Image (cartoon, rainbow, N blue to C red; front, side, top):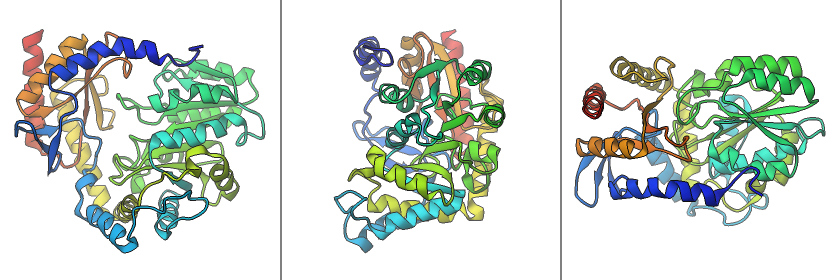
Length: 403
């Protein structure tokens, strides 16, 4: 027991941190949206800027995407077909998957979340279906997202599972030398900052046939041509030894998640996934409004507006980097982690920031190691320079006061 997960122990350790966060008024804040990443708390009317929104390009409130979501529901007259997509599906689902496949030059299928994408695809990889019938050694990066690590018990029923240190390419290569099939499970862009060494991993793929499985929830849209993300931008094009899952409601600004099964036209993989991939077979899927939003976002990703939004995002990231030093400084990615250490001190800092009009999410165990708590910041294209400058100055002042 507990070879891979121990929910009871994790809940016991983190309970105190969550309770402190709740008492500080930083948990379950009910808000009204004001647009452009600003909110008003329903309880007291206080307005604040959300510094921890993963809508990196600000597309969650883009008028064209919001309107397309509403129009899709009105046109179809229903939110979903209320049965398995294997039996019945609206044309909007077909159109959305075709559009995603064309946009990113992949074979894409959609699910209702990135976590469901992990549930659907990781056991398939572990089974050996995609590795010539031989179950691979499943190697998880220590910092892989929780939705990936949570699948270890299921994966372990199909293949041997092990974990290596974060971005430890040397340890991974040693395993490639001693096992006929190896699959590496990692994030492309990590939710607490940083990225996978994709170029080095592709070197191992070329040399040993390493199968690569990436969660690109935080990479899609923010980087690359047509917003194809860190992994695809580095690769040039997906290959049949790589599988990518992603969110469509972060930078992409729509709803749900997707699995990129391989190169466009990989129909055998497509059919295998739909017939055996758990959530892909169930009646839960992206609803009609979300599908309308996906189609509108695809159009935007093909337009010149995407490049302009990416440029604004990069300018905002660079501006913050010029004001506040973090380990991620200069990496060009939209996530910054401001380490504090003590969980209590982290919550106090977040509480004081909120009092001054800025919400910054405190993160602690099990999201990050015990005693390594801090603030997770996520920058957006639709933040004003004044907001970033005010926040950066306030953050430094408050940290200096606590030093």
